[in-house]
Length: 136
Ligand SMILES: [Zn+2]
Image (cartoon, rainbow, N blue to C red; front, side, top):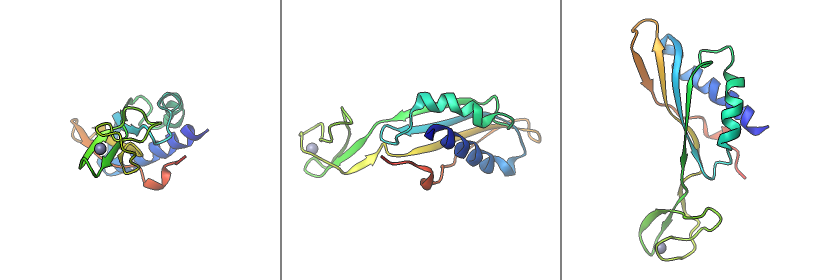
């Protein structure tokens, strides 16, 4: 199950990112799931608590934002979101374009932690290593 291993990788990545912050708890994790990342948000939400169990991410508020696929069209000189990810065409002029500019990645956008030392929430931003991605 791909989403479970991705959940473990995400938990590990978050723990690494907050290692220096003396965090007692991770309040929230915001992820961006591109429409072409191959990640099922529903499956990820189901498997994440399994991976987070017993860590400081156990009760974290998981936020997953879906990112549309955007392609660059050189005749229009524009980057536009695809209306349909089955159809790689510029929505402005209808020309085929495979020049994908967003929507392929699955990344950690931000992490909010509660720290023992400061008692204030700190937000850090990090990315899941590119090799964790599964491409179709
Ligand atoms: Zn165009």
